[in-house]
Image (cartoon, rainbow, N blue to C red; front, top):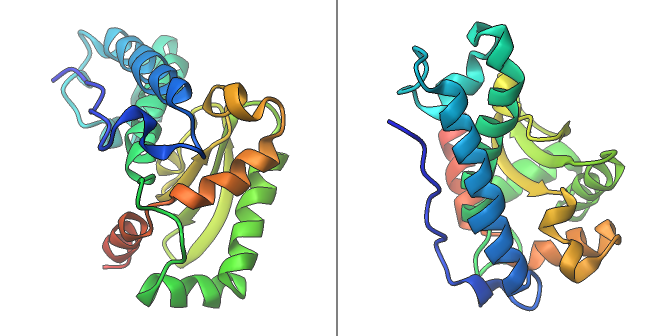
Amino acid sequence: MAYEVPPLPYDYPALEPYIDEETMHLHHDKHHQAYVTAANKALEGTEWADKPVEEVLQNLQSIPDDKRNVVRNNAGGHYNHSLFWEWMSPAGGGEPDGALREALDAAFGSVEDFKAKVKAAGVGQFGSGWSWLVHDGSGLAVVSTPNQDSPISDGKTPLLGVDVWEHAYYLKYHNVRPDYIDAWWNVVNWPKVSERFEAAGS
């Protein structure tokens, strides 16, 4: 089954003023579509063509050498962005609660310290990439990855990720990545993060 770009779970301008409408159109309709098109082309005719994207990314070492980087970049881009759209919401922002809040406090000291760690990882990611909250099998951790590499390829479960590619923020925030990350917390869909946290811990 060929991959498809999932529809946005909200309207393009819904994340204003934090994420602008034009960026959402370009990011979702152009960039995500380009990853899907390239991933489908690379996997066509292979035994992996009908596998779920998670399975493909967990088995990159089994992808033929001549296709592996294309698949890492583009299947990774598809998987990462499919999650990214759900991690944002017009009703987002605020603070996490319940078991997720307790786990963040235990792992990082406080939610504010957690946010600072995510920001530092995102600002410190040279070039394009992502900053992530992951479950690494034993607990919570903040990591960054270059390009469209995904934590799932390293055996980690992504619970939340902020896209720090310039295409995610440049139209509104120009070259000031820290301001984008600060604003992004206003649209984070904490209930969705909690869902993934609970699933990862079960």
